[in-house]
Length: 407
Image 1: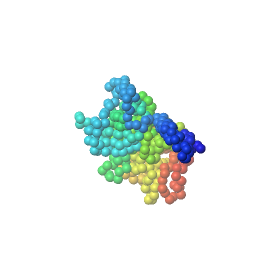
Image 2: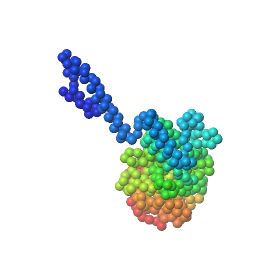
Image 3: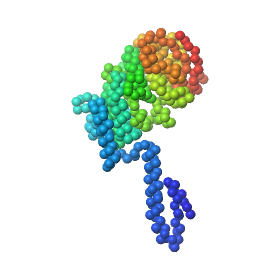
Image 4: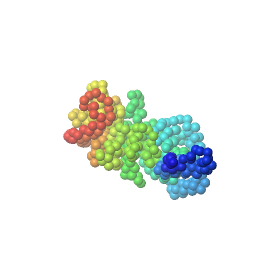
């Protein structure tokens, strides 16, 4: 009789009678060998498919070869190579991970203090992909980006399964802290918001066109815009999609999709809307602009009634009908000109078709114009998930096809 076991091996069933006890006992060794081989085969297949080892470190010749390869890679870049930190050093400068700055899609971030008194942000990555050489090559690629509106990578840690990135510390934290706040003392003035918006645009334009390799961020959102002591914006977390497998449920990673719900471009979610490109970042930037204008997430804007209204829809209607955002209380004191310009540019950026969105270079040109010089875009964008009892807003994710233009 044959019985199938895991691994696809077929084993002869021992007959349990007195005459065959000897042969049954003798079959124990070959059976054990077959099971062992099958188990090893399963492990080998899983390792091959995942492309990474489940073991935290290497030993022997493989370890020495990998260590030498990493040294050679870093040596090729000389002074341009990022500094390599030991895990024990990071533990020391973070005071045993005593001050947690936050936790994002790719890992936890802690504040660190260097021996010279300078502050850094240490991001410990979780669920990283690839081997050591691949990790170092990606780190070097990130390190080679240099722009005033892109966060600076200072160094990295690679010890077995422990991997971390060391960045400049941003004392004012992330943008979301200031645009979602109900504390008037934390609210930023319109001039400051405008400077942040144009800074983000310049940083994205650099990632798309100015650096050595074109970088699509895939996750532009207020939480990934860091602010220095002068509120100069720095784009963070670019390039990490290649290093990690995000665990957060709101970060879409299935079937090649990446991005945060509420900011993800339609074509990233479904290819029927177009091809994923730098225009996908433009869409996310537009949503950030509109949240900065509304001072809230793009799910709610109380106007005449206590209900949830999709703010981009409301903003478009008022700009098209009245040429302004009044009587909406934007929550900030400042000129209507800035709010109108930011909202108009944001609405252009969130057009359904990638071809209808401006490039980041074009966005920078739009910022140079006055609000009255900017044409109101067609009302053509996707509604965000909402909860509302009105008939006009019950259909989640419906597409508005009103393509009328107002000059």
